[in-house]
Each structure stands twice: as C-alpha cells, then as structure tokens.
Image (cartoon, rainbow, N blue to C red; front, top):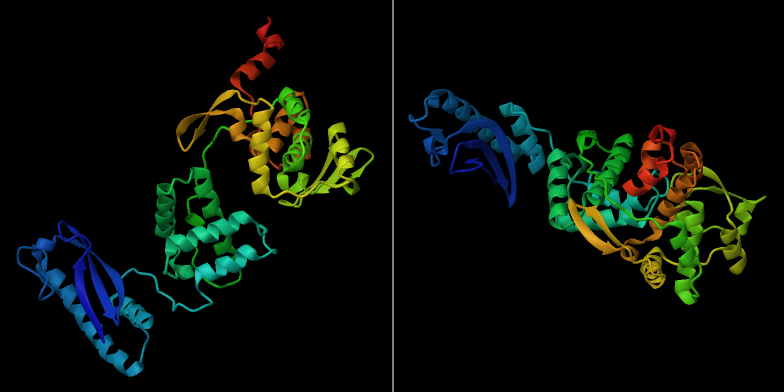
Amino acid sequence: MTTYSFVFKDPSQTSILYLVLRENGKREKISLQLKEDPATFDKKNYVFTKSNPYCKTLNARLNFIKSKVELLIRESEVTDDSFVEFRNKVVKEINVDAKEKAEKTKNNLFLPYFRKWSLGENTKYKHNRFKTYTYNLLAEYLGKKQPTFNDLNYQFCEDFIEWMSKRGLCANTRGSHIKFIKAAMNEAFKCKLHTNEDFRSFRKETEQVDAVYLTNEEVTKVANLPLCGTHGIARDLFIVGCHTGMRFSDYSRLSMTDISDGVIHLITQKCKTPVDIPAHPRVLHILEKYGGSMPKLSAQKFNARIKEVCKEAGIKDSVVVRKSGKHIRHEKWELVSSHTARRTGLTNMYKAGIPTYRCMMISGHKTEQVFLTYLRITQEENAEYLKDNPFFKS
C-alpha cells in the first residue's frame, strides 16, 4: 500500500519541506521548494499553525498536494502503476521542479554499462587497468545501490569526490576517475541510452605535482650496473624509455622490426599517434641483447624492480615533492616509476638544446602546455642555463 507524509530536511531549524512517498519498503523524497520553520508545523495533521504568518497560503498549497496524492493513490490501485511511475505522476500533478525518474532496467543501469564500456576496445579510452580500477572503486562506493544514468547528477559527482578524498586519493587520481565516468556517460549519451547531460558539468580535479627525472649521469649509472633476472630486464626497459621518451606501453613492446635506417617508427598505443625517433646506440644494443624484441615484464613488477635498481645505483638524492597539498621528503629512487623514463628522456632532450616542437614530435604531444608538464627543470638548472645569455651579460 502506498502512503505519504511530510518531513523537514532538518527538524531542528528552518529547512526545506519534503513530500515522502512510501510503498513496500521503497521511499521517494520530493522537495516542495518550501523553506519554513518546523516549529510552526503540526506533524500530526500536516498543517501549518497560526504562529506562521503565511499559514493560510501554505495550508492551501498542502491541501492541494494532499488531495492530488490521495487521488493518485486510489487511481494506482486500478492502473497498477509501478512505484516509479506513481512518483512521476505525483511530481507532474503537484507541479514541482523535479526530474522524472526512469524504471531501473538492465538497459538504463549505469554500473553494468560502465563495466562493459571499460572492457571495450572501440572507445577513445582503450581498455586498461585504470578503467578497471575506476569500476572497482565505483562498485565499492555504491555498495548495493544500482543507479540509473539519470541518477548521475552533479551532487553524485561531488559526493563521490568527497568519498575518494576521505580515502586518501590525491586530486589527480580523483580527476582520472571522474574523467572515465564522464567518458562512459558521454558514450552512452551518444548511443541514446539516456538524455541526462548533467555529466558535462562534473568537476575533474587536477593539481601540479612534483615528479623526478634522472640526469644523463644518473642514467649512465643505472645502465652500467651488472644485473640479471627481472632486475636486469627492468633496467634495460627503463634505459630504452630514457632514450626514446616513450610511454611504458610503447617502449616495452619495441622491436627491431620498428627500426629502419637508425630511426624508430612506431604508432603509440595510447593515442594512435605515429612517432619517429632516432635509435640511441644503447637502445640498439639492448634490442640485440634480447634477440630483437624487448622481454615481457608487467608494469607492477617493473615499478617494484626499477626502484631497487635505482637504489643500488646510488640514486639517493634527497628531494621534496608536493602531493595532495603536502610537502614530503623522499630519497630520489623511491619516486622512480615506469613514467619516470619518459619524463627523463623528454627533459634531457630539452636540456640538450633540442627545440620544444621537435621534442613534441618525438613525444607525440599535440599541445605545448601538456608537453611542458613533463619537463622537470629546477630553478637552479634554469639559472645555470640562462647565465650565459647576452641579456644577463650586458
């Protein structure tokens, strides 16, 4: 049986009055856009008392709502409307500003769609472990809830961001998860699975964080270490990344068939951008060492091994990095990862005097703004570079 009641958002102070519908354990709250003092409301009879100066007008509005709801309750017994259909009829009849809700079917549930989308290969964001991480995070956040596409509004985004923040996820990580949610919602929108465009206003957080790179001298230290096993493989993969400026997904699959006349010709896996990069002697030597193609090593194992390798090579300078608004001191080797190789390669190319636009042709970046985020030039290095400029001489 369907019932209704009126409740305030906060019974202890002036707040919004809601119409609450209930049916077999289900509940729907509809804002009446009335902000009043609960102390002036008779909770038993659902009327405002004379202590409220606008009681006549407010009670006329409530009487109208009660009559409409009671009539719709009687009609639903004949029409056999679902609870969602009943709720939508109430919203329409009492003339409040609330979005129509859709029945939860397999076709309009967001999470199952996101799972399918995350495993797909035909989108801009090709399947990778980061999308799977987003799905797992969403599943944990939602629990038993199964939101429809229409449930993903701005408030959902803000609540999810706040939840991730409490879990200690940094702004850039939170922003990546929101980026994937927006991409999935956009894909579903283009496929006409929903008409909810609230996702366009979802806030994608970013912050500038400090990250390390290795100098040419440090790269040489790593290259000259006598290593074997997975440590040796991780080192060799890293050196290839340092001399090509490629992403791990590209330098880990490099082979001799990608090289002709001393130049690497490759289409990047992430952005499908063709790049042409001169093959450094170390790169050629490493490929020959493994019979013409790079050995396989998972990103997880690589990141663990390369830290140990850099520690053994003495990459132990003390560095302070910003993360999530905090300044944290580390030894440099602790911060080395698969992406450090790309950052190292591009920074050292730039420091060697290679013009920005040529570095971008190697990295595959389309905008200088994004490319410059990869450069890790310190204030001291910048001053050292500029001190011989004529501007500072005359």
